Structures are given as C-alpha cells and as structure tokens.
Image (cartoon, rainbow, N blue to C red; front, side, top):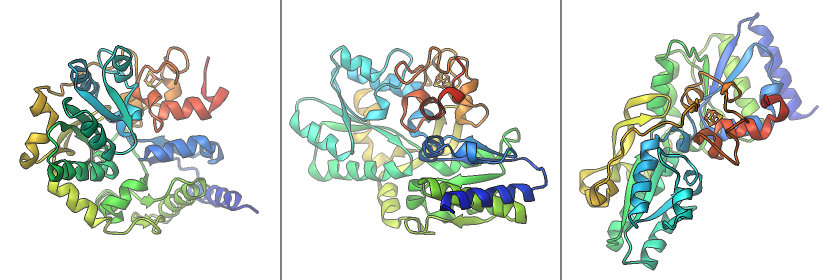
Amino acid sequence: MSVARALAGRIAELARALDGRAVRLMEVCGSHTMAIARHGIRDMLPGNVRLLSGPGCPVCVTEPGYVDAALALARRGVGIATFGDMLRVPGSDGSLASARAEGAVVRAVYSPARALELAAAEPDRPWVMLAVGFETTAAPLAALALEIRRRGVGNLALLCAPKRVPPALDALVADPELAVDGFLCPAHVSAIIGARAYEPYARDHGRPCVVASFEPLDVLHGLAGLLEQIVAGEARVDNRYARVVRPEGNPAARRVMAEVFEAADARWRGLGTLPRSGLRLRESFADLDAERVHGVAVQPGREPPGCRCGEVLAGRTEPEDCPLFDRTCTPAHPVGPCMVSSEGSCAAAWKYRGSQGRKS
Ligand code: SF4
C-alpha cells in the first residue's frame, strides 16, 4: 500500500471517529494552498473534513495602495526591483507590468541582493526594492538594508510592507464566524519564527497546530496530525517538519530583522488593519525608507470591482464562488491578486481543479 493511500486511510479513520462532527482546518501558507490544489488533496478528504485557505500569500494580502505607491515611483523614473509575482498585481490604476510596457524601469528579481547590482549598474538612477513578504522574506530584506548601509549605496531604498504571520492568526482565531478547528502552519515562515510561535493558539485558544512541509505526503501527514488532536480532544503544537523547523526558529535571522525592522500596525487585504502585524524600518534606517526618501505614501487604494479576494483570504469564501472566477478573471487576465500570484488561492483553483472548479 502506498504511503499516500495509508495516510488517506488514516485520515478517513480519524474522520469517522469524529462521529459525524464536521471540522474546518485552515492551511495558512500559500505553498500549502498550491500543493493541496496540485495534488488533489481536497478530493481525498472525507466529507466532514473541510479545508480552508488562509491569508498565506504575501502578494495577495498586500493592499492595492501599495501597488499605487510603487506605480507612482515607477512613473517618475525611479527604477523598481520587485519579486516577479508583484508585476501583474492590479493597483487602483494599472499594474507594474503595464507601467513597464509604457516605458517604466521595472525589473523582476529573485533575491533582494540583485537590487544592489541594479543600483550599482545605474548609479544615477534612484532605485526602490519592493519589500513584500512574510518573515521568510523579511530576513533577506533586512540583510539588504544592512548591506546598503555597509556599502554606502546612495541610490537604493525600500518600499516596506513585510508582514508577520502570528498577528494574522490572532485575527483568525478571534473571528467567531470562521470557526477554524485547527491550523496547518507554514513551513518556511516557521523555520524563521519557530514552532513555539504557535503555542498561544493551542494553549490559549484551543486550536491544534501542526507545522508541516508542503510536499504532498507532508501535507497529508500534517492533516492526519490535526485530526488526531481533534479526535483526542487535545490542542498543542506538533512540529512535523522538524528536519527544518526548530522550536526556537532561526535566532540569527530574527536578530537581523530586529536590527532593521520594528513591528507596526499594517493593513491586510481581507483582514483589515491588524496591530503590530507589519514591519517598518527603524528610525535609524529612515534614510532607506522609500516613502520618506521619495515623498510617496501608501494609502488604502481601490479594490478591483467585483473581486472577492478579501473574502477568499479570510477563509470566508471559495474562489469558485466569486462570480468573476474563470469568466472575466483568469491567470491570463487576472482581476485580483489571488489570480496573479503563484501562491494565490484563485490561481491554484483555476489551474488544478479544472472543470470541477470552473463553473463556465
Ligand atoms: S476569481 Fe479573480 S476576481 Fe474573483 S476573488 Fe479571485 S482574483 Fe478576485
């Protein structure tokens, strides 16, 4: 019997032990969302086990006003270095890809360090690195800020919107309508913040938490772990990715982040403004803050008309329930960020659920 079949059997056995109770489990990581869709894991689950996607895609939770600020910079000749997923995310008035087509200097980078090379290659042009991501990305962004300082680079700043995962979990457990029974916790983020970061959700809120990688067997193993706790009436943190995630996370990465960033309130698409959920540059790094250097401000912005990304990200609706899904909104012509990002729930549903997911 294959391992996958054995795990599916174990999940079915645990689901039966729930005696008809329906449970809702949330995957908090966009990579889990994509793996679950790609490998048809939803279809393997018994009817009383429902998977919800959470706000685990950093591009998707970034508000349209951030894109507007980046567009304003690009249109005044500032070079923009960005992770590729941000290129087609719609702002209130276009995307960075459309600005690039109109002649703006916008470069996709795989690593923040590449922004240093771009700035060095064009020393007369001001450059801005779009600093978007969760703790996994915040660490290399902090390292970039330190390197800019060390090298004395004068033409590179950061437009900051990194976000912290735990405050999003705080908002999710506080939402009585959502009623999540357990969290499949992220893999890479947990490598930075550590498995212990989830203890308050288990101890204080009674929500089982399982840290798992995003290989399909790891996801199934993680879901079985959540159900084992629910059946046993337990709520604890179970680290099933111990080959990478330590209880304390990565203290060196967190030290670098703490040197450069401080926690600040931040707006999340779908979740609103969450206390201390974002990271901003410390005052000692104000000279690298693109908002101050270039006199732009990140305002709330306008959501794409009809787009339900906010509800999708908060676990309140499924991509297929959006009236635009696979009609006016497709990966080729995305209306909202959840259809753009490689970790977006709508893109995952469109790509992997096929005719079952599409209603047209
Ligand atoms: S299908 Fe498109 S418009 Fe609808 S929620 Fe998803 S991204 Fe937004």
